[in-house]
Length: 145
Image (tube, rainbow, N blue to C red; front, top):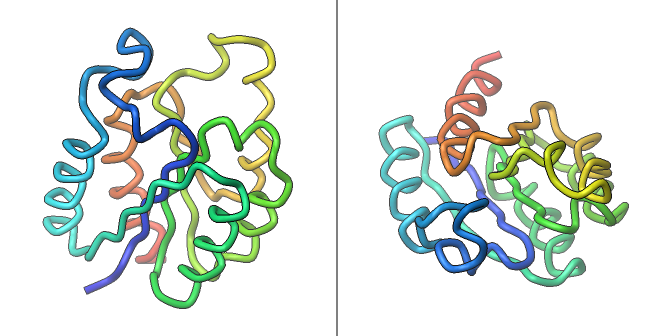
């Protein structure tokens, strides 16, 4: 069974509470449970981490490179500011899919620039939490190649 890591960045632990009109009503724990089930059906053992600090995100990505086959990442606000996370994503040994729950280009102008997108094979933005499920399907296809 292939292994995939799903890493969420700052403030994503507050899913279901924080700005439900943007991020929806599904909690982070509910989302993890749904994704674990979906991942198993797709043939993946899924590892989850929620990381609020940039350095911890970088370390987790670097460590995951040796332990999992693919990375699905929602860097949250770090996607707009972190060259360090971008570099870690670029160094990751397998496919990387970046997910954003909201359609970032319909939000504040400072959110339109995503540094980390350059470290992902695919970026999914604006599909709500469904973006994570699409990311699992995308990873499955990328690993087949």
